[in-house]
Length: 145
Image 1 (cartoon, rainbow, N blue to C red):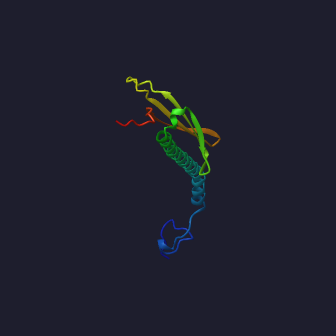
Image 2 (cartoon, one colour):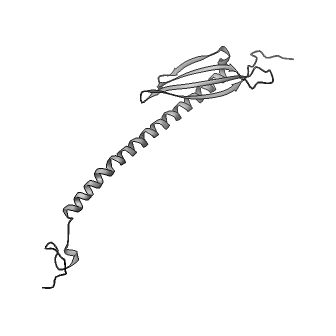
Image 3 (cartoon, one colour):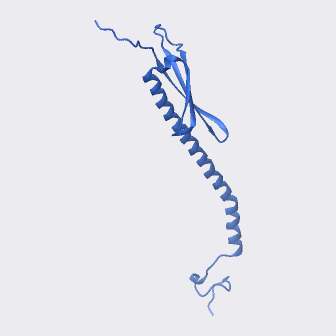
């Protein structure tokens, strides 16, 4: 009989005949999975939360830009502070605009700063994005000469 030294009863004549895992290898693998799997799942959860937060901020910034453009184009900012929401398309978002004289106006042209804040609730707390622009009042009448 020609057996290799230290070969167990599960191994045949060649090394290719040895199959399977020992109990200690299986237990070590299970222990490693038990340690690593919760960490991986926590990482996936954090990545999902970061993606959701980013999506909300991107949506809010786009909505703020759209509303600020409408306020400036219609010159409705001259009537003072305004507020509203984006229902029915974006019911979770609300907005508020405030108008204050721009402190950097050294020309006396009456330049105002318009701040538009978009708010939403996410994970039980209030989140917001603020967008600002400068505007000056234009006269509504046209003169012909």
